[in-house]
Image (cartoon, rainbow, N blue to C red; front, side):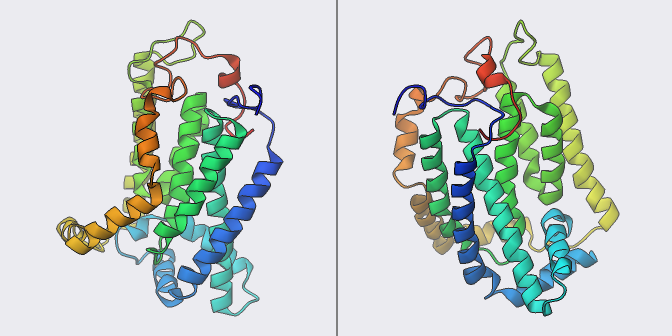
Length: 304
């Protein structure tokens, strides 16, 4: 592999259609397995929760995770010519394919800012290979398929300083799941300790805090707005009950096993290679350099 091809892209305007085709193919395999192992076996339970969310009668927090069910319902209505069960299964099969594709595509886009095309594809494929370990635990959790994609998209936008697009990501992610609050926090952590560049690249501390406050307020507006519009709802499970269930010996043993399967020897690689990661990816994204070359600072928030 020559040095030119081994360079990260930073951000660019060209679309890597070959990489997209690979990601789509892998996504189709994962979506098919997810439909067979989760979608069809748990059809009745999934349909009940979906309909409750659409009717505004679901318990908390499911009632307020509206984005994924909205898309699922739109696809279901588009397939209304099919029998109801087939329409529901087909709608969520299409949704699962799109959500997994978005997740892996944004992961690839994020990796391409730091690594070569080949290494980024390897990282994306490794993540895809481990996904079935986690997906087997799902009953009706369609928002989880979008969650990681939104977070990766947020990191891409933070690094490229696409703040308007970042706000849209926070808005969509907040409609998807309340954990979107971590995107504004990632923005804050990424910019703590940075200095404003001569070209105005990195935000000044005061400007950065204002931007963080804006992102946090956007999340809070969606979080509390949904609860105001849709009404209060009893929680599916109390915090004490959730803590008790997740700290049993059986659950902890399973968590250790699955964390080991998902990350495997890469735990060792991550710790051993931390000092050799690309500049800017340790802690704050801009902390290690006063300015960013045009290769890293221009282009759309997407993949090359």
